[in-house]
Image 1: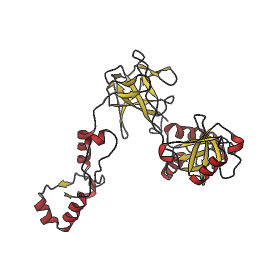
Image 2: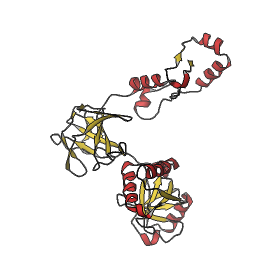
Image 3: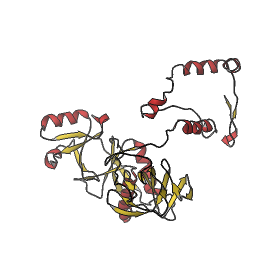
Image 4: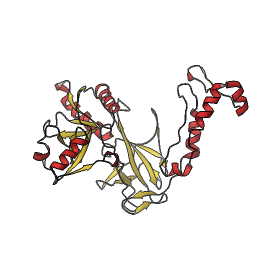
Length: 334
């Protein structure tokens, strides 16, 4: 058990008791906790390493309870760097020349400079600040002069990094989530893109102040680049009123807050009644868009999506139009 420190300013006192002492001192509280613990499955490290299970830990950061135990568990349980699956050569061993994977983009961390920061996980080899790497999607060189170690709002220059480390690359507006970068002195490599969850919430975004239309468009593009929301362009609504697609409503709240406070381009959201999206092949805008219960929109990669209210509308369309294939965006959406 813990004894709470005022306001979480200090680490809470830990009291180590035997089961018998805990039962005697805590009484029914201990009995209930013990009975609850018997309902839990024991931790299976192999299942965890295979990505099939996640250990659950309890604590309270504000009260400074359990924080150390959580960090100790991360150190003890996290697997070491290992070969990463590659689309070009099967897998990339950690001792191969440098390669990295962009897993996150963030802008506006320094509002004075409007910087773009790409978070790159080093997958193989040694990263050295200033090295010129190849941006795999474009084949163009990319300089890494401004490389940082980022922890919250703290930034430190990172001179070198190794597999498992995360490097923050500044002014990396040409990089996107899922991109691979690598040392051109080594073999060409391309890592699989990050899986994307199918959106279930859709809303039309429009600028509140027409005088901020330019800022609105740039901000929407930035949010899409970071993966805050997916941006769809409807045939009926046009570029000025993009459809924002999200897995959960919280994404809309984050987007609204940033549009207002970070980009100074407040937007108005009009929520739509759709809950499913399907890739359309072949693209038949006239047929798919003929129904008032369906809306068709183009994704940033050029793919066309049909938006449906529910699975019953999907099945009804499939029965009526057997020549058009509707492809789920992920397995859980089928």
